[in-house]
Structure formats: structure tokens, C-alpha cells
Image 1 (cartoon, rainbow, N blue to C red):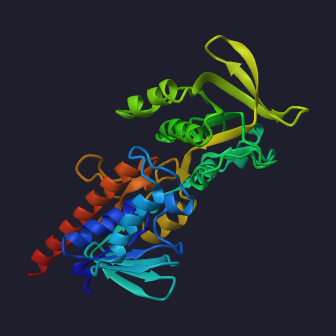
Image 2 (cartoon, rainbow, N blue to C red):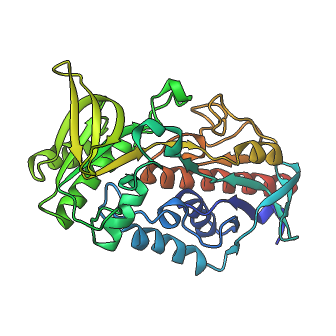
Length: 351
């Protein structure tokens, strides 16, 4: 397997899987390196329920992507491994892996993803203090299991509050960015909760709603009109517990300018997307730059949109900032095609 026939793909989430499949379909070799012991990235590792916007279960949709690369003779896979060193330059990289293997590649693609915001960093909203305060990923696991229950005592909740922008658009904790997909995921989650537990009332507390593009009708309006989700424009100050054991959501209704104290059985944090916690290490290993928030920095925006600050190394998906799955997959295809174009260019030079 020569460098001029091979692309190294780091990360096997939706973006990385898409990149590898594209490379293989164009007749070149893709070598996937994944630090986890399973493929599929956040949707599989975190147990996502139904994906936005398709409504298909994550295990099925991402499972097909995994099966596609696992069954392709042009793709080889290293699980529970990471790249520890990269030598060479565009057209002739040599990557050393933690398992001792070496990969020669003409180009490299980083699909290294993101980290979910840790709600412990927002302690006033009750996560880690009260058992019935969850994150959206934990709630999606409940949906996948087909049961909506309060962890504290197993009862079916009468009222569920979803708090938006937890770890997003919050300068006080150094999160200045919008995480793009949380509003849509939350409106979808509200509908999923109602489908499983029709007697449960779902409230979404928001600063603004950003269900972009066609998602406005499919999720925002549908969740209100068909599933009776109640939207409250508010700034939440804290989540505490009442004497009867129910949670109290306290803050200000910013439409009517008055304080609110609303009892809830479950409170769900719509957590944002942080840079991958390993990005400083990744940047050092691959010799690339990070932008000011800690995501991977990109090259020129319009003529090299999947490029990084190092020639021959590309990036796709949420490694560069908050991204939805569909766009991550499209970027994976784009990065894969760019990398293969590099390989063909190198072959012409060599001949």
C-alpha cells in the first residue's frame, strides 16, 4: 500500500465514515484510525435516538455507514488506536500509530469531532445536584429504551422542561458560539417524549429559537401544533428543589417581564458542542492550527473549504465547529474527494 494510493482518515464518526467511503468508491485506499473500540462516533457512543431530520434511528442509519466501510476491501480499520506522530509532507506522510503500526499516506483527513458540553460547568441549573436533571443525550437514551421515567423514583413525569443553550451562547463560561443543532434536536426530542408518554407536558425554555432552513416547519411548528409543546421565552436563573421533591425552574419570562417559578418533574439540559478535548494534542501531532475557541482552524474558506493550515491535511464535520450530521457527511464526501484529487495529482507528477 503506497502513499500515492492511500488516504489516512482519523476518526470514524459520520464525517470520517463518509470520507472513507468516498475514497474507496474512487478506487483509492482509506485507512481509518479510531481511538474508540467501536465505529460511529457520537451518535453511537452517546446512544442517540432518532436523527434529525430523517427521523431514522441512529443505530440503523449510522450502522449502515459502518457496514459500508467494514465491507469494503479498499478500507482498513484500526480501532482503539490513535496517531502519535506524523512525519513528511503532502504526498508523502508517514503516520505512527499507538499500536506500533505505520501508515504511509498521500493525504490525511481529520474527522475528529467534538465533545459534548459538561453540564457540571453550569451548576446553578441543577445537573449533578438533582437526580432528575438530565442532559439531552441521557434523555435520548431513555427514548431509545422506550420509557420516560424520573431517575429518582421511576415515576412517569407529568411535566418535563428542556432548557436550551446549556453551554452555548454563554460568555460567562467562555462559550460564545451557537451550537447550531440544539434547538432542532430539542423540538424533536419533545415530540419523541410525547409519543412515548402522551400524558406528559413538555416545556421548552429558550432565549431564541434557531431551527434553520426547512427545520422551522418540520420541527418547530410541528412540535407546537401537533404535539402541544409549550415554548417559554425566558432567562433561567437556577433549578432548585421544592419541599415535595419536585424540581423548581426559576427565572424571568422575558416576554411579559416577570419572575417565574415553575414546578417540573424532569429538567433536561440541551447541551452544546465543545471543541474536542484532545484538540491541543491533535494540533501538535498533525502540525495544524486551532481557531480561537479551540476548534480546528480551516484554510481559505471558499477555494479550500476542507483544508487545514497544513497542506495535504483536510478536516470535516464538527471538528471545525458545531455541525449537524447531514452537513458533516457532505463535508466528509468533500474532504474525501479533495484528498483523492491530491493522490491523482501526485501520480501525474511522479509519471
